[in-house]
Image 1: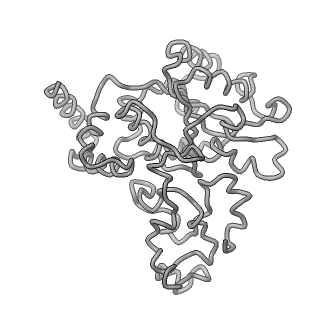
Image 2: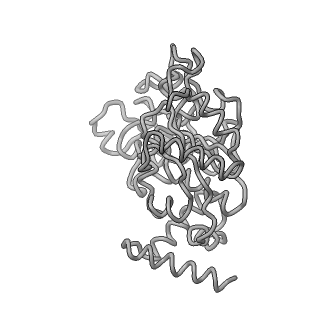
Image 3: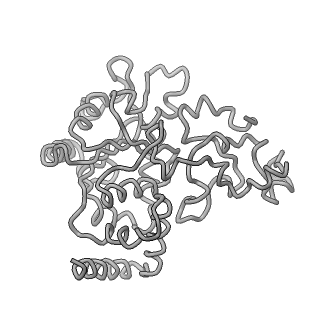
Length: 318
């Protein structure tokens, strides 16, 4: 068994090196992912094996409802593993309207074939909210409403993962007065979901959720809003690198000011970090390059329920 794991690792490393990714960089990523998931360093080797194992690949059906595709765009920019490694070696993406080659009747055939072949064994990832007024008439694919599709696909899914704040809480389209009756997947369908909110969410939180399943045989522990605790247990404020400025009463009061250039706290510019649960300060975006507060913009609370209504006006102090 150990020799087989070593063989799998070596073959996986060789594939990575062909893409210009060194073994050291990949192990560094796995160490980072392990810490992000709240696991001890002893799990790093097992996380490596999850990516290197050739036979696990859970089938995934990814649905698009009322959304902007920004969550898919974020997922397509995963780093270590790159998106092709995710699709070809880690999961088996059976249906995804944005990246699949099929269209029209062929795409519909793929969806129903996957549902039949992997009944009760596939993960359903949903991107986008569901309109509920007028029997869901405001959103349709192939002549069927999002409500109909959602009920059918999630019914036989092993688990349903909501990717982004639209699928989780309804998103901007659920903002008042919400004439279409847009809701998050859980509320619209009356089912339990794993929620990965954000506008967009960090793709590492989706990867962490899938790796948790492959490693532990179960989905991660969640908070009262169904969010994985490894990613949403702390507020932005708890881990913010500008926290010391907040404690010292050093605030930015105008964009472009000297205080802004010195990296002072953005609380008085409307930062919602104290009431927003997410791991943005730790994982950042684009291979850990930056995130809104580091770039000088206050947090708008996009991973919180009904943020469009509850957190606005975005540039006024809490």
